Image: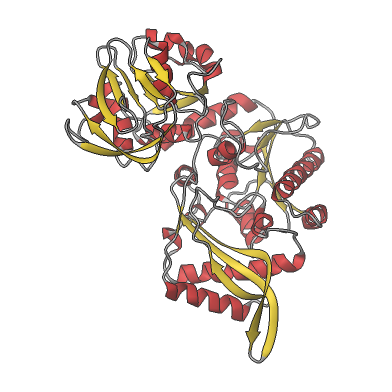
Length: 515
């Protein structure tokens, strides 16, 4: 695993997708924020560098820049969007604010052959890409040539092949650029000369080594949520540090039907990993009483989790570290992944570290992974397929699937509806085709009629999406027959619901969860 790519992050919401594409090409990579890149660059000794996009304007005062050493090291460099613009600015070109903004799908015209487009599109042809920029390059540095143009970007792709510098205004890392993965692979393999020998097995070994180096002889307490992420973390840590690990499963009272028993059975019986099962449902529900704001709910749940972990850590004689199943989509929506200027979308209960009063450090070995990559790692670790393949379940649990105030009654209603929805999905053979599916209990009552009686009960929303990484998602196109069947069962079998609707919102503009 000698080949490595360094990705310098300028705060783009999709920087981690670059890493994802690089890893998919079999090349190890790491992300570093622009303000720490200079100190990391020499020791990391990358075979090539990729400069990410970002929300800043190159024309602004004190806007981010790449270390000049990157351009003097004699290695290939690929600039993407903002990365292209800062490359041009730093090498003698010019970036300008333009009225010709491009956001969304665009067509670029290839003006001459280029290794970046090798095997994809030839000179004179058009290619579909995804643009998202306001500023644009107004003049390219000496030594560069234009290799692609678009209506809004006369320098949509440029290249200095003598120095192996390439830059594009569009985003090859997103799925909306159909051949973007191939373009990045061309850069890593054909331009940078990487061998592509990195695998998830290699990631497993690297992370185990990192955990052992971080933890040493210390004790680790791992919070199990019942989902795939925390389970994979626990198994990885158990392999790395054995009896130094103590798992704690906190039953918040907001789990799905039968979930607690499944978790306890898997870890106590199958893996023989030390596990404390703490029923804290009354504590959580008491603190959430009367709270309807989604951010307040998340913060209450996160804070209460930490309180419970602190208490359990004291009960077992203290722990030096807290392990969490934090993933990159959690991080990028909550805080800047690497300390850069990316925008916060929503907070996550397990993102942002621990309060100072807790004398514990975080262990988050999955922090740079997406959900499907976690599943691959889970299989690598030998987790049962029926567990690895489970749909994602949020840390705050059903609390964020009940907009408004949470009560025992609402939780009971939602659990019953959720079971029916997933049962119908499994009966239709669709469970493995869907990224995530769940029911939501809305804070809305509607008038209905059952038999000869008037009803005034809750509305249930069904949500199912397809995604590869959780960063974007499309609603699943159920047939009307399926939706009718699921709706009829829920209304007939769940007392408290008299109307069912289906959510057809994609991400963006919505999120996958309702809160």
